[in-house]
Length: 148
Image (cartoon, rainbow, N blue to C red; front, top):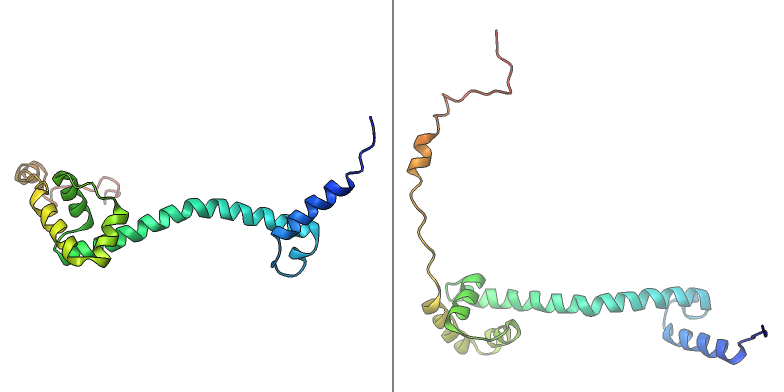
């Protein structure tokens, strides 16, 4: 098998990597091995960050929508359920933008959601369950040792 020295290929590869590490602190921008570790870590965090950004923005939109909804006497969940029942198909990004920049429009959306919101069903009375249980004095603590 012939010997391969990789002269120009090696130089190009290292130059490219050191270019990516430009601006890093101390040896991490000058020495190949340290730069390679730093660049690998940075690229890993960049990959994770691109997915994290989507979560962070959705969280921000929900906070903004909730704050605006509470000004109109609704919670975030009630507003979203009402809008879904009313057939409004705005996403959270648009709702948050309307809440911040057009409060009058958001107020009309909140009214729409309030009208269309499904009312919670009333729970049955719990009197029967209380009557079936013995009073506190009648209950015996089984784990405590019996005093003789």
